Amino acid sequence: MYTKPHLLIIDENGYRKMEDEAAHLFFQIVSERYEKGSILLTSNKSYGSWGEIFGDNVLATAILNRLLHHSSTINIKGESYRIKEKKKARFFKLDKQSEQGE
Image (cartoon, rainbow, N blue to C red):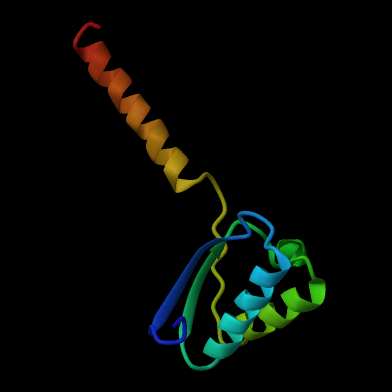
């Protein structure tokens, strides 16, 4: 099932620690797609923290080995896009209210 799409998108990897069974299933998905299909993965955790996510440093290393072999990593630093947009929206509303004399 997860091997069929040309691109598999996995968002928020590391949001919370995976249970053992989920971590092993994740490894199987990555292994089955290895050199057969692309994976786009987002995470707010550094590679060094992946042992904590999967509950096993050896498993995390095996997953990273396959993911990083033919990959490009983009590290985005700074404020969250969602927070930026929220701040802009509040600022915009304040400006409109002050223009209307409220």
